[in-house]
Length: 283
View 1 (tube, rainbow, N blue to C red):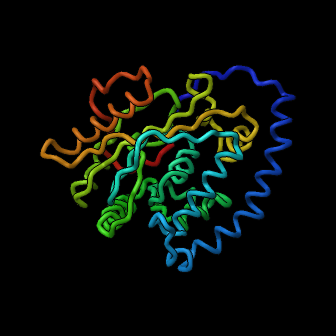
View 2: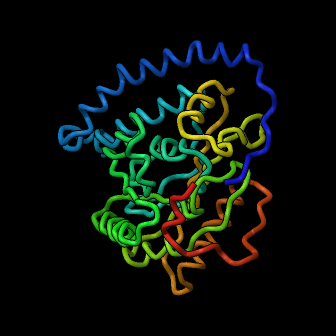
């Protein structure tokens, strides 16, 4: 994992003030809002449909995750429309917040490393939202994850993944692993690229990404005190599985995301990296 570029200095007093009002907001979100989520992430919530046709348990996940983003000072913005019908969503990846950001816009089953299941609160919510966990370094897990992904899609459940192979930088999109797009062929569903963009003052908010050797809890606390910024979700043009193959799909998806982010990342001139799904979850 690369170290992101240095962010502008942030005065200690301002960080202290942010902690002063965000910590109570976080506690309220956990103590008051979370029990509501617990009740509705049951067959009760699944059986109730809103006027829009969305299931209540799906809506409550979006509501809670969007609220968590706002506690951290993120201003949510959506560009484009999620595709109607069963879809395989693929996005760039720079932070644990990416899944939270995606869930604020669409209820879907994400592929994630097994360690996330042990994270307090977020791990529980991820499990209840149908996250597909992968044990890194396990060939048996690779086969199971691929099978579960295809099975969910055939059942009409949206699935999401990060084809880069793990978290990277906010201002750079790494090469995509083509093998993950085999899911589209096996389930006969399109892939919709999604560009996740963290912006402050019209520049990438590079401090959102993990620092070298920074664990989840350290990153969580650091972001809680950071200046607010925009968190944008760009839903791009869906890509149908076609005779050109999964490598072509991965290249098209990556190019769309790079264009939407307006970064200077080279446009995948070289070969794609290793094709192993195991790398999808490495950080």
